[in-house]
Image 1 (cartoon, rainbow, N blue to C red):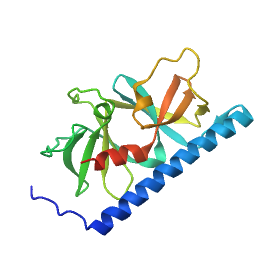
Image 2 (image 1 turned 135 degrees about the vertical axis):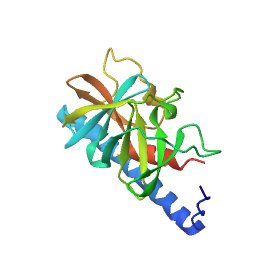
Image 3 (image 1 turned 90 degrees about the vertical axis):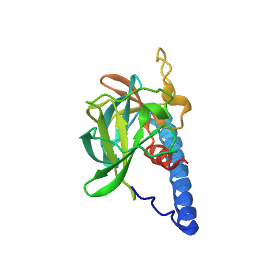
Length: 187
């Protein structure tokens, strides 16, 4: 596979600026959700959320950030890529990068053959490798802080978590899609 050309510096700077602004908006949105939750007692997040399993725990990802969920395919390694970048593959005729969510969390393991790739919407095709996608949750309840009795989750220190949500199955971290997509850009 031939080396892909490096985008011009101007395009890289614009992309970095957009990613920075997106992160700031997500942080502000999370702050406003916490403030609203403290005022009303509870806040239901609108829409549908996928329940993903990775690194021995479950998390939620906004379904509107997902283009498709597919089974794991053969990946072509990228020499020199960070450990969380598993490689590339062709998705619907275009190159895609596979990011291992477990590796982003510091858990090193070989993906199983029944793992899933969550194809994220965005300018570049990025797929999030997870152990499995279990179900959809409608309008989960955003909780303020870690509830009593909750186990310490590995998501807390990664920058991937936008908050905690209560679902019928228990408390789940809510993933920040911009952090996942930024992880795909890491050198």
